[in-house]
Structure formats: C-alpha cells, structure tokens
Length: 418
Ligand SMILES: *Cc1c(COP(=O)(O)O)cnc(C)c1O
Image 1: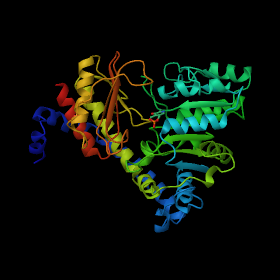
Image 2: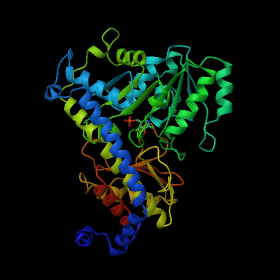
Image 3: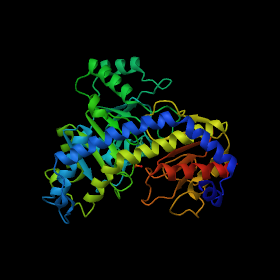
C-alpha cells in the first residue's frame, strides 16, 4: 500500500527497501527520542496547569498592550518550562538574530568586552558585533569583541582561564548549535562543565547561551546548569511550527528586565507590547514543541543513517548524542548539494514546484542555496535545508513537523541525487 503511493511520488523500490532497513537500525534511537519527548511534554503540561491557562489567556491586546494578561501568563509558562526567573516572549522580536541583538545591546555598555568561547558567532551577528563594519554595530558604541575558538570541538579551557585572569569580561557567549560551521554542536553536559569552570575564575561575568535549535532535544535546558540567560527563536524549536513569528529571552530577572527595556523603551519594559492575537499560537506552539522537535530529531537520525549507508560523510552519525536538530551531510560535490536541496523543496507541502538556486545572500561571503517549503516564511523547524556553495559542499538540514513528512522529504531529496 505504502510502496504504491511512494512510487507515485517517484521513489523507487530499492530506495524504499534501504529506508526500511535504516528504520530498523534506528529503532532504539527513536525509542530514546520518544522518552525525551514524553518528559518534555509533561514538563510543558505541568506549567500550563500550574499557571491555570484558560480561554481568557488567548485574548489579545492592541495599541500599547497594557495589562495583557495572556502575554504575561504565556511568559510565565515559558519561564517555568525553561527554569527561568523570568522570560520575555514577544512577537515584536523579528527573529532569533533580533533577540540576540536586543540581549547584547541590553547587557553591554561602552568599554565592555563580549567574549565568545565557541569561536566566531552565527553569521548574522557579524554586523551586530562589528566583525563586519556597520555604523550601528556594538563596536560603533565602543563594545569590544574577542573570541576563543574551540579546539577539536572542545572548549579551550587554558585560553578561557588566561583571559578571565587577565581582566574583566562583561559577557560570555556560548553558541550551542553549529551554525554554518562543521564543528559539533554543544551538549548540555559540556555547557554545564564549562560554566562550572568559568565560575572558578569569575563569579560575575554574564553567561549567555544562544540556544537556537537546541530546545527540547534533551531533557535539560542551559539555565538548569548555571547559565544566566538564554535566547532562541520561535520559528525554530519552541514555536512548534505554530507560532507565526517571535523569539524569547529567558533567565535572570534583572537581565530579562534590561532586555525588555531595550526591546521597548526604558521605563516601559515588559509592561507594553500588544500581543495582536498571537498568544494562543505561541502557547499552542510550545505545547506541540516537544513532539515537533522529536519529529525533527527522528528525521535527522533517519537522514544521517540513510546517507551514511549511501556512502556520504555525515555529522552527527545516527547513533551519536545530539545537541540540536541540525544534520550535516558532506556531499563533496556542488551538483549533489544543489540537487539534494532541490529535492527537499520538491518534498515540501508549500512551493513544492519552485526550484531553489544558489544566490548571493546579504551577510554571506559564498553563495547559499536554501530549500524551505514552509507554512511560515523562514521557519526552520519545518523541514528545510541549506548549504553554502563551498567545499566540502555541506548540506545543513533541519526540521520536520512530523516524522512522516520529514522522512518523505529526505527520500525525495535522496532520489533526486541518484
Ligand atoms: C538560526 C540561528 C540564529 C538566528 O536566528 P534567526 O531567527 O534566523 O535570525 C542564531 N544562532 C543560531 C545558532 C541559529 O541557528
């Protein structure tokens, strides 16, 4: 029955047979993912019940957004789930980049030093920090930037220690997911270990985590292991594919307040910001997120093993621990990378008949190809795949609202490179 419908979609029987073998191999991994999903689902449900979420919280405000009880309670739900003192969860955040920008501008002052200990941060922060000149960058306000690279996927503890002993650092940024690099993503255990290490030398430095793509992949979030503040996007994991936009900043009360006063205005902070009808979607997205993240991780695990079986280099391998939802596949061939991304697009529910091509994206040095047939523009908790056109021609694939759709997208993409 299923073979027939796959055939109608142009998936041949050898590939289906291989997919069947792969699904047997990944079964124990899927069981683990389901356990994590169960735990995180109950964690979310507990917060909903504890905060007495009811119909009235789905109401909305306009204008200034004073007294928006839905918005305020939704932020309390996020805070409870993430084990934060407080959270700022707003549609007024355009993206993860915007939330990271607001956080950095909120916490840093002229003369302060921002130190990244996971190497160069995510590409879109280049102009925010001033790594690429921009008259509105942190650098233009006199904020210094320093970085310490990872060494073979591990924190360079010696360099971190030396730097902290040399003089004041105001904020340390740890980016867990790999962005467009080929390093490994950073597990919660590693976050815990490095925070404990940092605290030996500096009790005050603000430790901020770029948590994009990592929420609910495991059972613990960074605030539980000592981070001061975490930032993420709602068109990634925590939006569950339902939030129409937005991002969050969660953690220490004083830091969340500073961020709120930067997002809105000093003196207004969290009190303003109309929810414009999206609170229900944000809450429903959070409710679905454990399960959607699980589907994304399963899709990544399936793709990892399938492409490995077909002879490609993959990172992480299907049975390696995962910190995020991203799967790298090194094609070592430009055409294959392009074909794979185009296949992902063909397998999508939206714009399945458009064909993505590499293009010169603002903020990137190489051309980039991006496949995303998503309900929400730019949403990468929905199955999506992109790759900078440079050796080793790596595809960065992530998302999958359900495993069935994710699996199909992967099969379509693989068929397209065969
Ligand atoms: C996606 C991402 C961002 C930026 O988020 P946008 O919502 O795309 O602006 C920042 N850091 C990491 C690690 C990401 O994966």
